[in-house]
Length: 455
Image 1 (spheres, rainbow, N blue to C red):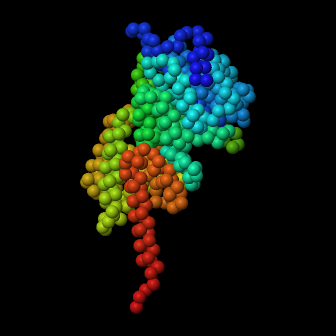
Image 2 (image 1 turned 30 degrees about the horizontal axis):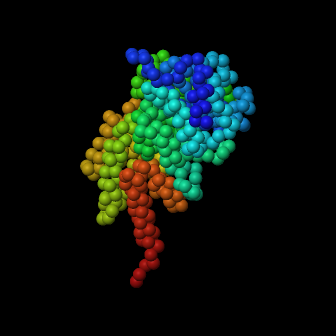
Image 3 (image 1 turned 90 degrees about the vertical axis):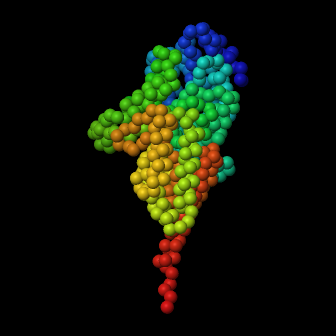
């Protein structure tokens, strides 16, 4: 099976090779992991159809591992209910996909590491100057916040949900499935068309497999009403692929800037949609997208570790610990947050640092917050845009609020501790310290209120 792609591709009407004539244009391989085995299937098929309007060239080779769901294939036909490995060729007709099907697998689970790893290995068999990876699927961030308790291996990432096979990749599985075939190499760019993915913890996990990540810390809102209108499509893969088609040597940063600008442009304007009575109404939706330089995530983790240690020390003992607890609470309450359990787990990191610095009178804490914020602006976030109705700044972090019920908190902390960022920093210990300080304060308060009077 591993050799099939090489045999099948001999019929492609040009040679697939990285052998680049001296002074010639660079060879680009783009690997797209399109998991439509869920309610995204219609949008995934439309995205694939649109990519065909660009197609591959002698300097751009586009491979898609596609998976569909029988209930959502629409007019594309039942043959698109399963899993297919596709080499994208140009076709301008919408509503039908004519690209070369290298392999029709029947049904494969795109929510397991083996499927992802096999796909990447096949793509890397085509020699090229650089490789890029994109994924279109559901995502829930660093932990599977839909789960109330861990069962079996603790999930540390909810990505690539496969409804037919009930599959779901953990963050560790996702990284390993990419890292093994890369064998020390890196993707130039990883593009995540998945909700809630541009988090410190996810970037930190993937820093050894890619130079840049493009993603959103927020939900990605797709608008397709009535069906077939596709008013907001999110990341339009064909747009940035066309930039590579036209200029095979375009820098990864410039590709990313194009993706971010095109994405935000869809959210920056109002869209006429029918309301319940069928009367058109104008709607606008929040959006945020950014480019993260993964090479800057080690220094960022070190600085966040220092911040965690500083706050833990202040929460250790003495009368001032309650003052710092209140500062942390107020900063969380004022910060931009994202869908999670009770929407109290994922926070915009730059906004949280800003609020923390505003709430405290501690000069040392203010300096720490300012220093990390400057690092985010100058080093980590290469390019970021968001709509006016959000305080998103490009990168989020997990910081469980003390209002989370104890059983949910414990389960999600178990999941979170499996991440590399949690292992390498004191961030999870800080979350525990905030929780224990809050619990102790409430216990003391309850004792004060209900202790019988003595005479």
